[in-house]
Image 1 (cartoon, helix red, strand yellow):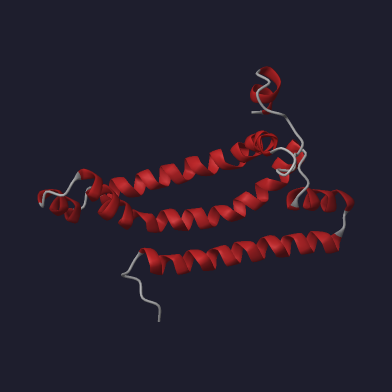
Image 2 (cartoon, one colour):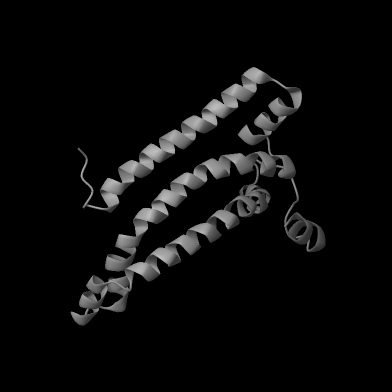
Length: 164
């Protein structure tokens, strides 16, 4: 991506950071390549998972009943299909947070951002064990809180699930 969009085409900068208070569009241009590098793989996996879940749901009997009632295809897909297929998709999205934090180390190093990933990378290079432990602890805490939020989202998304 850096080679194509930054070097060959010259559309986007290859590295660096601009404060949004200095130049909003400059900040967007600098953040676009790292965001795409982090998000495209995750988006492809979520899209594939959503499609797989939807194809299974749309073949079930209650979908045929909804269509036989005369409901619009849009209502059948959104209200009945996606509402029943969203559970596994939310699970995968929650699990991808851990992958996101793992890959942010590489992305921040490649694009010249100074954030949590860059700090962890520098700690690994310098063999700073307390900082490595703190970074791993923060990442683990974020993953655990994300999994808790995903579990709580099930209650809001699927009324069949009862807490108790």
